Length: 143
Image (cartoon, rainbow, N blue to C red; front, side):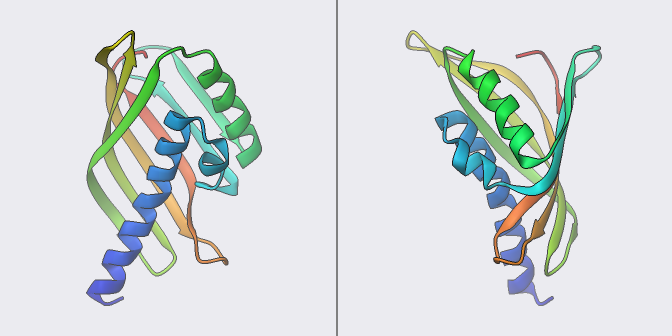
């Protein structure tokens, strides 16, 4: 891969995670679904606790579980992803880590709920769209 192809692959792999975050925060579960391959897996845990979720397997299970969680949240969530570190990238796959912050606003008050990291394995599918095959999370505190 030349440098412009590498930059494009990295950008489009990160876009898959951005669609997940935007989809969840805005309640757009079609967008969220489109961020995962059909056979995707996801899960996570809260550091230094027994609390975790997943693994969820398959796009539909992921969407159904996350839709149920979001329905019980009365605040407006905002994911912020940053400090991206790629460990592998090719024409059709990428693996990266990034930090995240999750903020919430309710009754005109915004606060940081938690921080942590995501580990993403993304692939370029036959339609040319990059989607996540695996998404793992570690949160520093419960949310």
